[in-house]
Image (cartoon, rainbow, N blue to C red):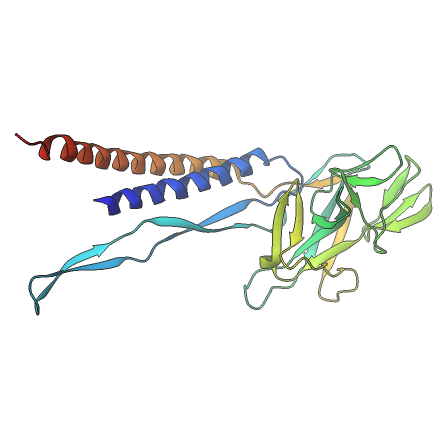
Length: 268
């Protein structure tokens, strides 16, 4: 009987993790450049039960499923829809040609290179830039880096960003925005606040001189998130229903155990 308790509990925990993931996706549906997460749910290996009638004879009882678990949560790195904002500080990263990794059969990913508040290099797709009081170009609080690895400083309200990422202020060249390329998306780790790092803590190579990669930057545009809100709500309702079903199974086992302890085992 306890095996059933474990199976129902495993199902509840898996659906709870899915609900948390879907809630985070929905909360970031309007976050620029956000890549939606997707959960992979797998079943634990089944066990084949046999009954030993005597020393030589065995009879098969049947298989026993031991529950499910969330194997991994990964992001969808496909291109988000572009929308025009008219804001000079908004820049969308538009992928044109990104090679497919031979092992995963999935496309690589492009990112803006930024420096977080701890001085560490990180990567983001959030092109909702802004200028601080010192004229430093920021992405959600992180400094946007140029191809020479330095923060970009713009001392003018009249600036333009070309498709190649060149920044001009009052007609004068300032810097070129650095774009990095990750061939194997399995090496990417979400840190929150729209930032990514590499699992091996190595720096991503620049996409600028990569002959297999082509891209363009579009000023006055933003890349939207890859969250499908309607599907996310549907998946969340499915997760809720599955959680409730496992909860009822757990309650049924609890009542059976209570009856066994209080009635069947009672001495007359």
